[in-house]
Length: 329
Image (cartoon, rainbow, N blue to C red; front, side, top):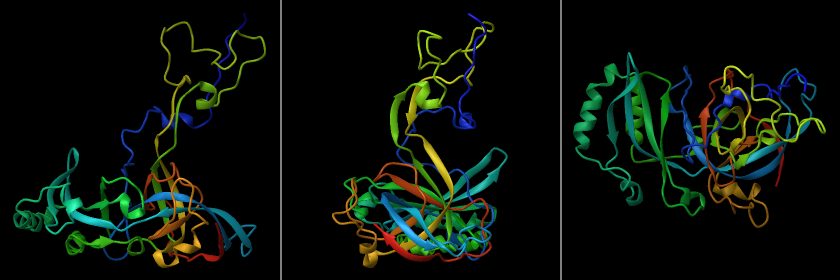
């Protein structure tokens, strides 16, 4: 029969193992920028993927073959309704990692949001937070977004934490305290030309074989009884299959984070017609509120929640606004 032939998966694919289904429709953000210039501000926002457009702009990247020329690129439209600041949370640095030491919630919340949390002794909680600011390492804002504000049918809001960066810990605490119970729009956090990292849940493709899931090579004609299987699962001894061997299993519906997505447009309800096709986007409809257009693609299906975070890699010293000529829907 000859020597067994091993088919290796595509380069870099093991970085995503194990490829299991995501535990939630909401992606988690585990890392935040270490340094934030300027005053205190919230470092994340969210939205719902609506559709794709073509962005015609002037390429302003230096030292590129197309510098100064017209460039047509893919753009993803994300409906970004305002997020409500439910509360804030302080974390202290311990030997076992970050630990929450105080929580403060707003007393004036809408009815559909007040069902999510029960506020008791808000004044005492605010006093404990004031006294514990000195040993607080990080301040997070507790945000909530309603899918119905974007025109979707889901009633249950998404609640998540977003880090507050810039300034001192006291300034961050006071900044979020002044925002309690208020709505924060996408234009208050990001501007056109800035770069964000996008976290989302990819499209689910169900159970797939090794050919589609790991892109292994099909076996030669008549070399084995099967064609779309791995040539070998490993040596005879030891009698176990290594985790590096590609196998069939779940494909898609994984959490993924894509870095350095440039914000091309930050729009509002008044100029939403510029990105709305006739009859609305397929599987989504019309964008009727605030929105952003990101350069490139975004993981996930339409209507799925997408989180945008201030970039953690290669942050430029100055934001350069894009020169957009036209948006083709």
